Image 1 (cartoon, rainbow, N blue to C red):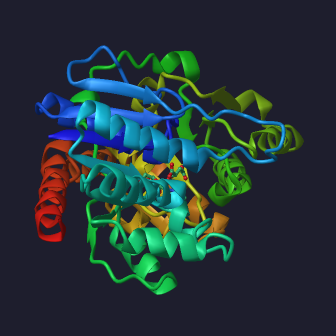
Image 2: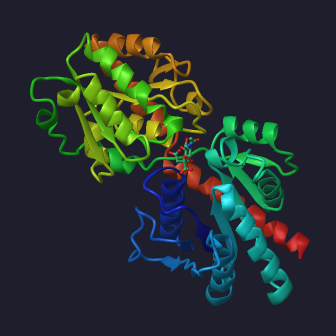
Length: 379
Ligand code: GMT
């Protein structure tokens, strides 16, 4: 198959899912063409069967907002025609599903070619941004016009059905992990970060409001009051500066390290004892799965799809959003009981195995096949 992949070329979330999936498809012999505004962070364009097409938006003094969707639709049309693509897979509905619908219309009406569109819903495209009345009609329309729609969790599927008038089936295909990358042989160098035997607690995110970063710092402060520990803050985003300020105010600068967008995520996870995720909304929580694959138990909220990944009392604990005290208590119960911590670490790794990439990729392949089969019915 020749597959066009449209995504945000970001450091985490949907961008990573799209990139890893594309790489696996390419390894299976499919030709994969990424169509994005810059090269996806984890993409190696020198790999066999991988191609990258950059969307260029031309500015003009009249525009207050650049017409990105237009440029994206045009690039999709162009790539389908020049590269002979069979199918388009768009990750994150806004504005990708809408731009893909326009590309599909142009291809059919101007070139007589029906190119099916698979749309994967990832989270905030539905739960935060998509619901906004400024976008809702266009999001509903473009989901309904996709040939196949998938969502990354059951919770997101339900949210989509509850908030939009959806006439299409939505298939749940959970996010996945390449466990080969987490064999446990990384050079951890724990002593470098925790020279006095401190427990290591980690958080990774794009530090947006939805992640409730102040809760991360407060949970850590609560744990630190009773247990010698350090906090590793990985990633960057609009809430980072405030978080640094909060850390200063609480007198925790010596034991909280901000790493920004480091490429050493796996090494930092492999030395961690606990992972914190305090989000108020999270469709899946890929980062929790990454932590679990690195044998790190997760203290998280019970928001959205997180309970589909993190199992309360086995791989970590779930607390209501904003319940810092419960997260502190759960964290201490693990950190102060080495045997239980070890058990949870093993459970976390075992649970991550349920999301192995090899079992998930065929589900996407089947979704592509279905979309292509429907093409024959429609055209
Ligand atoms: O919120 C993020 O970290 C980024 C965002 C995205 O779309 O890039 O993540 C969403 O998609 C991820 C991949 O499917 C999910 O694991 C995240 O839970 C989801 N984020 C939210 O729902 C807030």
